[in-house]
Image (cartoon, rainbow, N blue to C red; front, top):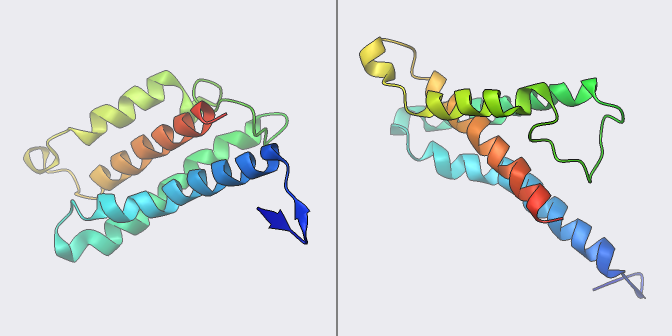
Length: 125
Protein backbone atom coordinates (compact mmCIF):
# COMPACT_ATOMS: atom_id res chain seq x y z
CA UNK A 1 0.00 0.00 0.00
CA UNK A 2 1.38 3.40 -0.96
CA UNK A 3 0.40 6.95 -0.15
CA UNK A 4 1.85 9.58 -2.49
CA UNK A 5 4.23 6.92 -3.85
CA UNK A 6 5.75 6.41 -0.41
CA UNK A 7 5.37 3.00 1.22
CA UNK A 8 3.48 3.00 4.49
CA UNK A 9 5.20 1.43 7.45
CA UNK A 10 3.75 -1.88 8.65
CA UNK A 11 2.67 -0.11 11.86
CA UNK A 12 0.75 2.53 9.91
CA UNK A 13 -0.99 -0.15 7.85
CA UNK A 14 -1.77 -2.11 11.02
CA UNK A 15 -3.21 0.91 12.84
CA UNK A 16 -5.30 1.77 9.81
CA UNK A 17 -6.71 -1.76 9.59
CA UNK A 18 -7.34 -1.79 13.34
CA UNK A 19 -9.07 1.60 13.28
CA UNK A 20 -11.26 0.70 10.30
CA UNK A 21 -12.24 -2.60 11.92
CA UNK A 22 -12.95 -0.98 15.29
CA UNK A 23 -15.14 1.83 14.04
CA UNK A 24 -16.67 -0.35 11.35
CA UNK A 25 -17.90 -2.73 14.03
CA UNK A 26 -19.25 0.16 16.11
CA UNK A 27 -21.35 1.42 13.19
CA UNK A 28 -22.06 -1.63 11.00
CA UNK A 29 -22.66 -4.44 13.51
CA UNK A 30 -25.68 -2.67 15.08
CA UNK A 31 -27.34 -2.85 11.64
CA UNK A 32 -27.14 -6.63 11.83
CA UNK A 33 -28.25 -6.69 15.46
CA UNK A 34 -31.23 -4.48 14.56
CA UNK A 35 -32.47 -7.28 12.30
CA UNK A 36 -33.29 -9.25 15.48
CA UNK A 37 -36.07 -6.78 16.24
CA UNK A 38 -39.54 -6.52 14.76
CA UNK A 39 -39.53 -4.90 11.34
CA UNK A 40 -41.28 -1.75 12.58
CA UNK A 41 -38.64 -1.26 15.32
CA UNK A 42 -35.43 -1.98 13.41
CA UNK A 43 -34.49 1.61 12.54
CA UNK A 44 -35.19 2.76 16.10
CA UNK A 45 -33.24 -0.19 17.49
CA UNK A 46 -30.27 0.69 15.26
CA UNK A 47 -30.35 4.34 16.35
CA UNK A 48 -30.63 3.33 20.01
CA UNK A 49 -27.61 1.02 19.64
CA UNK A 50 -25.65 3.84 18.01
CA UNK A 51 -26.64 6.12 20.89
CA UNK A 52 -25.07 3.69 23.36
CA UNK A 53 -21.69 4.91 22.14
CA UNK A 54 -22.22 7.70 24.68
CA UNK A 55 -20.79 5.09 27.06
CA UNK A 56 -17.41 6.35 25.85
CA UNK A 57 -18.03 9.58 27.76
CA UNK A 58 -16.20 7.90 30.64
CA UNK A 59 -13.01 8.31 28.59
CA UNK A 60 -13.19 12.00 29.52
CA UNK A 61 -12.25 11.00 33.08
CA UNK A 62 -8.92 9.52 31.92
CA UNK A 63 -5.58 11.19 31.30
CA UNK A 64 -4.86 11.19 28.46
CA UNK A 65 -8.45 11.09 27.20
CA UNK A 66 -7.46 8.91 24.24
CA UNK A 67 -4.68 6.34 24.36
CA UNK A 68 -4.76 3.89 21.45
CA UNK A 69 -2.73 1.35 23.45
CA UNK A 70 -4.92 1.43 26.57
CA UNK A 71 -7.37 -1.38 27.23
CA UNK A 72 -10.74 0.27 27.89
CA UNK A 73 -12.22 -2.83 29.52
CA UNK A 74 -11.58 -2.65 33.23
CA UNK A 75 -10.05 0.83 33.01
CA UNK A 76 -13.01 3.18 32.53
CA UNK A 77 -15.97 3.08 34.96
CA UNK A 78 -18.63 2.30 32.34
CA UNK A 79 -16.27 -0.31 30.86
CA UNK A 80 -15.78 -2.10 34.20
CA UNK A 81 -16.37 -5.81 34.63
CA UNK A 82 -19.37 -5.10 36.89
CA UNK A 83 -20.91 -2.78 34.28
CA UNK A 84 -20.32 -5.34 31.53
CA UNK A 85 -21.99 -8.04 33.62
CA UNK A 86 -25.03 -5.77 33.99
CA UNK A 87 -25.09 -5.11 30.22
CA UNK A 88 -24.98 -8.85 29.45
CA UNK A 89 -27.69 -9.70 32.00
CA UNK A 90 -29.85 -6.93 30.50
CA UNK A 91 -29.69 -8.74 27.13
CA UNK A 92 -31.56 -11.71 28.56
CA UNK A 93 -34.19 -10.08 30.77
CA UNK A 94 -37.83 -10.91 29.91
CA UNK A 95 -38.85 -7.33 29.10
CA UNK A 96 -42.29 -8.32 27.85
CA UNK A 97 -43.15 -10.30 30.99
CA UNK A 98 -41.86 -7.49 33.20
CA UNK A 99 -43.81 -4.92 31.15
CA UNK A 100 -40.62 -2.93 30.66
CA UNK A 101 -40.09 -0.86 27.52
CA UNK A 102 -38.80 -2.75 24.48
CA UNK A 103 -36.02 -0.21 23.84
CA UNK A 104 -34.07 -1.40 26.89
CA UNK A 105 -33.03 -4.50 24.93
CA UNK A 106 -31.29 -2.57 22.11
CA UNK A 107 -29.60 -0.48 24.82
CA UNK A 108 -28.32 -3.74 26.35
CA UNK A 109 -27.27 -5.15 22.95
CA UNK A 110 -25.53 -1.90 22.02
CA UNK A 111 -23.61 -1.68 25.29
CA UNK A 112 -22.64 -5.35 25.25
CA UNK A 113 -21.47 -5.28 21.65
CA UNK A 114 -19.61 -2.02 22.31
CA UNK A 115 -17.63 -3.76 25.04
CA UNK A 116 -16.94 -6.70 22.73
CA UNK A 117 -15.69 -4.30 20.05
CA UNK A 118 -13.42 -2.51 22.53
CA UNK A 119 -12.05 -5.85 23.73
CA UNK A 120 -11.47 -6.99 20.15
CA UNK A 121 -9.67 -3.72 19.41
CA UNK A 122 -7.25 -4.45 22.25
CA UNK A 123 -6.73 -8.05 21.14
CA UNK A 124 -5.76 -6.74 17.70
CA UNK A 125 -2.81 -4.81 19.23
